Amino acid sequence: MAQLWGGRFTKETDQLVYNFNASISFDRKFYRQDIEGSIAHVTMLNRQGILTDSEKTQIIDGLNGILCDIENGSLEITEEYEDIHSFVEANLIDRIGDAGKKLHTGRSRNDQVALDMKLYTRAELLLVDGLIKELLEVLIHIMQENTETYMPGFTHLQKAQPVTLAHHIGAYFEMFKRDRLRLKDIYHRMNTCPLGSGALAGTTYPLDREYTSELLGFDSATLNSMDSVADRDYLIEFLSALSTIMMHLSRFCEEIIIWNSNEYRFVEIDDSYSTGSSIMPQKKNPDLAELIRGKTGRVYGALISLLTTMKGIPLAYNKDMQEDKELAFDAFDTVKGCLALFRGMIETITFRKDIMESSAKNGFTNATDAADYLVNHGVPFRDAHAIVGRLVLYCIDRDIALDDMTLEEFKSISPVFEEDIYEAISLKTCVERRLTLGAPGKAVMEKVIEAELEYLQQDFR
Ligand code: ARG
Image 1 (cartoon, rainbow, N blue to C red):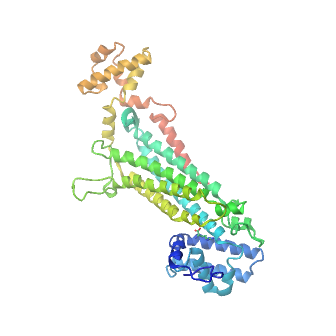
Image 2: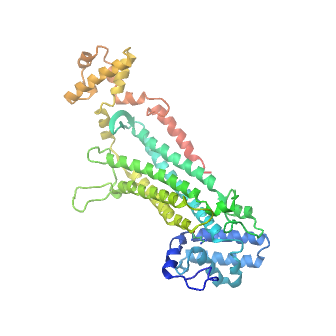
Image 3: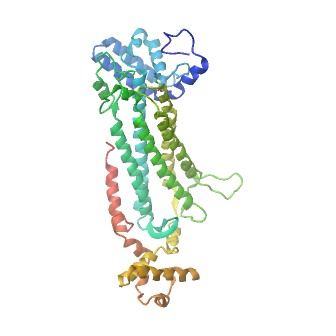
């Protein structure tokens, strides 16, 4: 047991209590941020005349040495320390002696952990954003290649109207684009520095909080020391954004599972992204897509856990808040893993364009267009709807598509039909005439793709 606070105690902590209270098994993850924060703190203490130049140099050299040794594997973060803050401080004192004991001047672990968690979360947010961007680049490529790949669009999982693969994938492009906007928004709102808030009420040392804020890449210092040590809103917002990302991935996975099924066969997941069955030799399963769908629950769980943890905490710091870490780290790692794997799966997937197209042909997806044809020839839409309904029934009885009917058959149901009906209800016509902004017609789709390519050129900030 190695603690920073033995002074006022007359008894050793019970071992089970110590273990229950300790956080080093998981907060070791942000050793880099802890050291980075300490270096900024010490730089400021020196600038304010609180530490001498020599103390500052010794401490910073010591901290850099610790960082270097952890990264090259020669210094192991062991569980004999209560948390990463104690580990770093104890190590520093071992290395440089008395100067190391001044590191914690004007600081509490409360503002220290608030800072570490924020720095870590900020870095993770940027990583997640980068992974979404990489996914968007794969999606836009699929869109560019498939502006004329016709497929059925569905409502209620029933064939509805024809669209293109570019259009369908484009819907996910929009979702992930919104996810990035959410991240950007959170980034700007969270980018304030809590360091210098002390335990809860600031400190009597003349700290320059704006200077440390600047050194650590924040936009400004926080304005209330109690809020600073008790705030985990940014983490809740990020977990909420991560939950939405997972919801999008999960919906996409669900579609891929359906499309990959023996009944649909719209896609074939690459062998390298599929798994087999231990008993059924013929099976090639979409386990990866199912796992991503499954892990969505885990990320939602992190959000709900943290919201619940925070809801009853009086100001300011309370130990409940230590519970933010394991769930957040798990959610961060889960989302990053899912984004990278999903990208690989969609990048290597084979789209069976012929099957998609024949599915669109055979599902009466052109029925609305047949009704529009009648409307264009003066039939009121409600009557046209009824006439085409009869056409569909006629075809279902004979197991044929609208396009397979002879002109006599069309005319027997409505004399308005002429030879040009075939052109009017061809898959190509049905799609290419849909030219409203956001619709699947190639001409408008290409404009959208152009705008998205421009968007991808923009910087995060
Ligand atoms: N391990 C603690 C946490 O994660 C660090 C802050 C400890 N502060 C305290 N007053 N016990 O929240």
